[in-house]
Image (cartoon, rainbow, N blue to C red):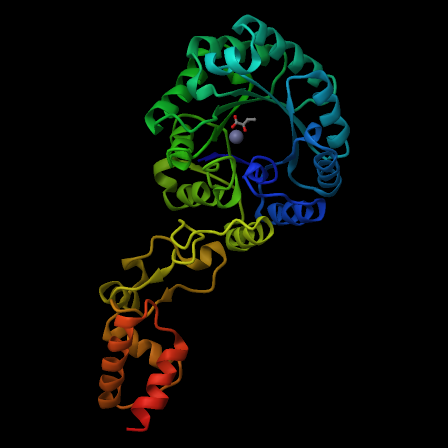
Amino acid sequence: MREIQIFDTTLRDGEQSPGVNLNTNEKLEIASQLERLGVNVMEAGFPAASPGDFEAVQAIANQVQKATVAALSRSVVKDIDRAYEAIKGAVSPRIHVFIATSQIHMQHKLQKTPDQVLEIARAMVKHTKKYVSDVQFSAEDAGRSDIEYLKRIIEAVIDEGATVINVPDTVGFLMPEEYGELIRRLKTEIPNSHKAQFSGHCHNDLGLAVANSLAGIRNGLDQVEGTINGIGERAGNAAIEEIAMSLYTRANYFQAKTTLDLSQISRTSMLVSRLTGMMVPRNKAIVGANAFAHESGIHQDGMLKDKSTYEIITPETIGLKKSSLVLGKHSGRHAFKDKLQELGFAISEELVNKAFEQFKDLADKKKEVTDADISAIVEGEVITT
Ligand code: KIV
Ligand code: ZN
């Protein structure tokens, strides 16, 4: 089974979510938790972006013991020098240089020809190699780049010693089959591709970031990039917890695994949500409040008989105590009786029936019936009658 490296960019691309701004202490707290989760690489920030980012990257580089710490840099000498200053104290430092390779970006943003961009990429990887052995190169907007040009630029930077080649779908444009095919072709058609690891970095503009990342893994990616809770620019990045749980749940399908401590997923998600202020939607896969909650009577009945009927993942796997049966208008008698037992009410079948009727009346008026509501029904209404 192949081992997929997890590159976490919560502290860099994740922090680029509009409205998010983390201070150094908050970043250090997240970095410690990412170490507990067991990410292989954490991108600590973009040191040339601001003095605050520089300070945070430096502090993280000095603190982290197990993971590789990466610093992002444009393909510009002064940015690379700054990245090295920030990262040099790390046990395992990586500098991540990027330049755009799509015609749209080269023409409108960089205002350079493809040949000029190729020469800059080659020279900047060479410059970075003077500082660190571990150099990641990203072809920004690879998803909309001409594949023949991509092959040329990637071959050139591998010749200069790039150790990891990242293939970003920067604007979340590709479909899973297309992204998978792109990775397959780059890996098979670039003559020196075996000298570097290939990494995937997918954005979620069409809601496909995780699907595209998984398609990339099926087609040979060695590393996958993402953020906790999928936060990031615009619609966000691929959610690491979803990728990791897909690989875990469908290990036979992917023939690939991560070395994450999955039991830290819930804790990591809650910490990132609290410190960034980015609420996790209730129905978000894996870490949303409803991910292990069951409301309908048929589902609750199945769950009470055997959890595998409606859960493909146990909540314990991601560090949660148990699933919840939420009582609402779709709930049935079986779940209701189970709740009475959990709340410590041992009442006759006749009283259960009365209480159940009142519960159904209340559930029609209220979206979720709480434990306090059930207690009030049983104590106030039923027991006194
Ligand atoms: O989305 C992107 O292209 C990036 C690069 C800087 C890797 O975040
Ligand atoms: Zn990105």
